Length: 349
Ligand SMILES: [Zn+2]
Ligand SMILES: [Zn+2]
Image: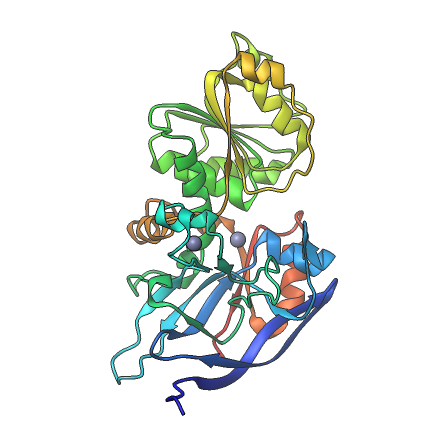
């Protein structure tokens, strides 16, 4: 019989089984220590998609068919099996195949065989990182300076999404930038644009508190898209070289066509707006490039470096930290947009 290398470990994890059905239960992890590293999770951020699985039992077409461990914004420390010291790592939640045409082209976010934490895209679903331990490939572990606060480093994944969105625009250096929607992702896009040298960043959000956050995160101005007079920003074929749409609101997507300059770029950031009527003629006549931004590629490593260097300080986004055994309370609060921005879970006992 072949040498069986698999090891088992049992610990607690946060499972979602369906709509409003979230609980902590034991998970038996089977992993191969010759191929995978064991990481003890310390902190995890609750993301919009986690909230969606909890509130609706699915995200878009990805419906829960069996219990799945939630979470993809996690950090932790390695559990070495050779007696060496643990290393603090940010965990890249995406395990691409490294073999398909997209991986070979360097577009691993489009991998045909992606296994992404806490996603029901595949069946069986891929368990996420809201667990006391995960087993991951070494290339998913990005070591970080242990002096950096966990509050900060747990933003590595959402900041990677924001940096990827900026990269999808080409460059924002010296550009006039619009960011519609200043929730957690929009606010990080603002911070990433500032770090990447944008000349001017105008944010919009319906909520006053989010507009204040936009300013704290680096926006030059923050406007209420209904009450503010945007006419001057529409005149002369539009004001902004680049617009990032991070609200998922249909009027924002449509409105950005008039606010973006001819020849400019519109980036739709990771939201799920569904079907949208777009004034295509106007968009094409202005030669606007409309691009998507889905997850991230090597921006995950960039994000860890930016957080280490303090190029982005995400702490204004952090509302509170809950113990993972209080995950239901935590996700209820996270889902209340009037109360919460980012909620994190601590996995320390
Ligand atoms: Zn996320
Ligand atoms: Zn692949």
